[in-house]
Structures are given as C-alpha cells and as structure tokens.
Length: 133
Image 1 (cartoon, rainbow, N blue to C red):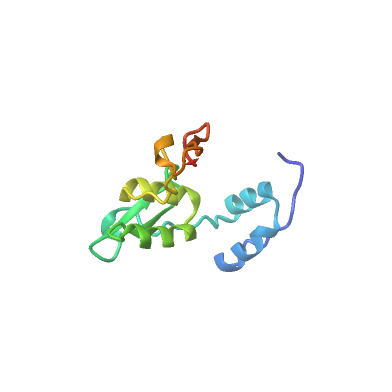
Image 2: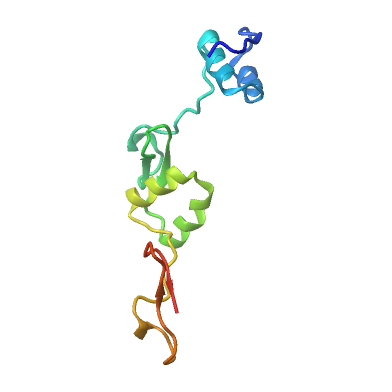
C-alpha cells in the first residue's frame, strides 16, 4: 500500500530472517519476502503417500492445499482421536475425511425412547450435531 517503509537486512540467512519476520507488519513481511527472495512459509511434510514412511501412513492435504502431513490412517479411533488435537483444524478435517475416522462426540440420544425415565425427552440442537436427554 506504500504507507510504510522499513530497512530489512536481506543478507540474513533464512533462519535469522524468519525469526525476525513475526515482529514486522503483514504488508512488510510480504514485501520483505519478495524483495529479499526469502520465504518463511512452512514446507509441507509430504506431497504424495510415497513421501511418508511406513506402509500405513497417508499424505493428508488440507482443503486449501497450503499444508500436508503424514498421518497413520491405520490407527484405531482412540489413537487417532488422541493425536488429532495436536493437528491444525484444516488438517483435522482432511484427516477425518481421508482416514474415514470421526472424533465428533456421540450424541446421547436420537429419539425420546433412547432416554431413561418417562419424563426425559431427547433434545436435539438446531444444527443436529448434538443431542441429549
């Protein structure tokens, strides 16, 4: 936008440059990367399944294509769901789809008959993603 200029040492190596970059505004980061021909974008762990070690590892690519990582789709649901909180939200969504495993909580009920007691009703939230007695 041309509203700010800043001196940046383009002679820094990539590690030094990328350690300094978080302290700059977004427009300065973009301009400095272009001017200095240094990128601080993360490098994806894989591009295809063959890039992953182990027979059961799959290269999971998030929907926007900006990141990919190896995930063992042979994990059981418990193992998978214990690992999932350490992944970014886009990778979680891609991994659940690719590995056909869901970590969404299981609703308590679907209909009133699923609830114990005569006075308990099954209440389902508007988006249908959760229900309880």
